[in-house]
Length: 162
Image (spheres, rainbow, N blue to C red):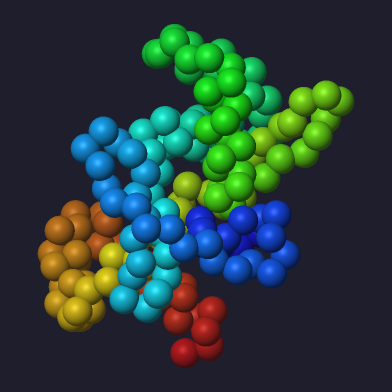
């Protein structure tokens, strides 16, 4: 389905961004940031991040009950808590759902890698000096990561016909 910013709800055909003014909290609460180019990336709260990691690992649509049962080994949660988190993620545009019988099956709208790319893009556009930010980023890469970056750049240039 391509990359969709988390502030766009898949239920909103107009894809109008929903802006919110929240801040990063020490308790793992969600935060929203607006980048230099106005791209809004909503940070996951602690439980949202755990649920999204699980959903990305399944590679298939799942019921709230499946997620709850999977998380039960780590933390006791009520069914309604997990259901609310998953529905909130759907309203924020991170999940889609389909009614199967009497229950919804949820799945991520985009891959974890696409989410990572969105966060990297946000970090770059939020920098006052993108060239310097990229130099610092590349300086932190291992040789294997630098090779992967070089291959990705080569592939992107090839796709653009350069």
